Image (cartoon, rainbow, N blue to C red; front, top):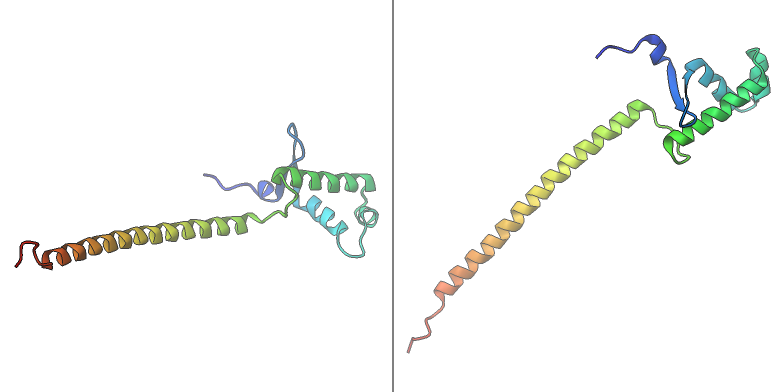
Length: 132
């Protein structure tokens, strides 16, 4: 597997509709994020970077819509590294759960066998019915 080029690493793909995908550069995303900072507005950020405010409004709307449609339910986006760490944790917990489930089944079987053995040993020590 080849390493992604620097251009691929510096962009994020956002699904804005079924038909279109838009690759967002990190700089474009930072511009949209800058509009959400306290004291900043879309118009001031657009002037600062010599962009049309309507373009920045459009980017902001598309990024929000694409994020929601990609997630399917207006939830926060989690970084890929955090998602991988959480998936690894889930795998480890599932492994431990499987191990504990197996141990529980073994212990239940051991208790069942011990009870049967105890009943058998008790039955053999009981007096016979034909005693005087």
